[in-house]
Length: 294
Image (cartoon, rainbow, N blue to C red; front, side):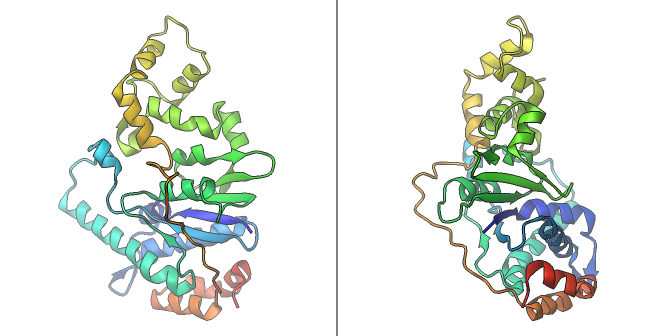
């Protein structure tokens, strides 16, 4: 059985920026529509019978205890704040109503203080109950490159919903000359703009990789800046912020379960009708064959 860990917030934000303005009556439904559409596209590319697990960000982050400016955004307009609240309301509807109604009851993972990235990283690496020979992460987040893995038997790959392509550790090695286990070190040095984590000024991922391989001259100012930074508390802080999963999961007592589910055509039709997703109703035979609905 192939398991796919879905980065729901990542897919949700993508939908927000593409189909987010769609409505059904007076209700905004574009994020839900775009989210489900991306799921169906993924299943077209995945091995038949792939079992999804839906991972969600908590509404607050334990990382802020280490770095209060983590993911800090510029002050938003009232209109932008209202749109974000509407987005979160659709996230809640997808997690609490739509996915269970489609038949994926108990497949949503969320843990207070943690992000979807943490749950996926723990799922593919630290939980023997869910790891399989092939494990897929569905996300466009490059932070998850550190989860890429290949040993000849077991493999973890990433499906990028923006490109509709799989990405492997071999490709990471060819593109960046590092393996998954080294990626968090690259991010700790270079920083992460999307998470507002500052690294060495003027140093990007490519320069950080050159440093790791010893390919920067001793007299290179960026090399000297990196060496100073690596001795700093800011570097140790960055490692804690970017390494997945966050915190000490070796002592994790909770076990996430992937319950068996039976997906029914009538349940999918009911959801599509409720949310006015008529294009999916027209594709019902295709969707039914894709997911093996009964």
